[in-house]
Length: 166
Image (tube, rainbow, N blue to C red):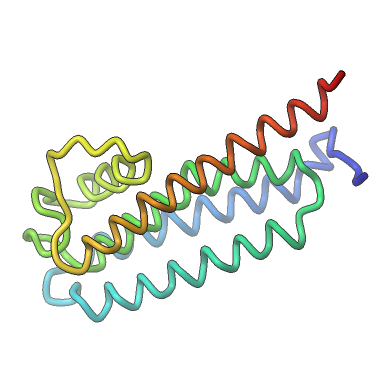
């Protein structure tokens, strides 16, 4: 069994990694969702989509192979799944552009971020809807939300059961 972090000093690298994930996702969303209409479009949106897939695969590999502490993994999963993934999907939606080119009814970065969270959590209010290539992206985000949120809950229950067993 691996050593579980207990002090702030032992958590420092994990907190730094989480901060890096949050900062990177925020900067990606901030930059890509503010592209002007002549720059945004299918090419940059597709490139951003590929980057998102690469990021998700690399993070999954990292969690499975490198993070040995269940507490650290649960913390990083929570940060990634609850904040980072929706921000990165919102960045990709923004890279496709506005004026109903990706999400019908979205008029700016805040709308795209809202749409991303509603899609990720599979709430689906219906006030905005994806169009074109973003329809497939929205389906991928919804499926990702099902899987990742399920994994997060399973990991939390497993950690609780391990610490409070018998």
